[in-house]
Image (cartoon, rainbow, N blue to C red; front, top):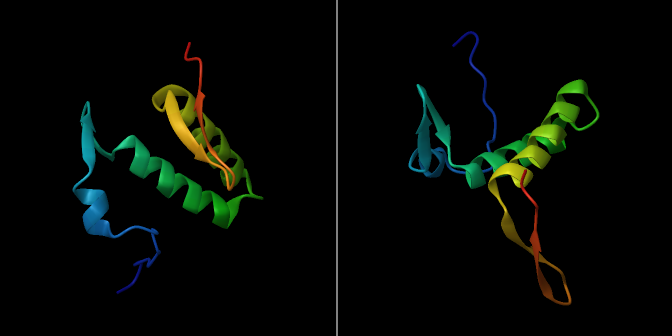
Amino acid sequence: MAGRFIFNLGLPVEEIVKNVIKIETFMLPEVEILLILKQLVFQERSLSAKGQKDRIDILSLYKKYLTKFKVVNLKKEEEISFACN
């Protein structure tokens, strides 16, 4: 089929589809899923202008929506909090 793209999303499509939220008229993946997808895409295009936009989006998602998350270190787990404005 012409114009058809095949891309590995890194997550099963079924998992993405069952974890969506509606914001205004948009159906979007939940923030955690969106963050995973953004990070996977960033790995592919990190050196391009779109990759730089992905970097900004990833950091913005962490700052705005994930006020508390765990960072796993090989030696110990730490909790990091962002101050949200």
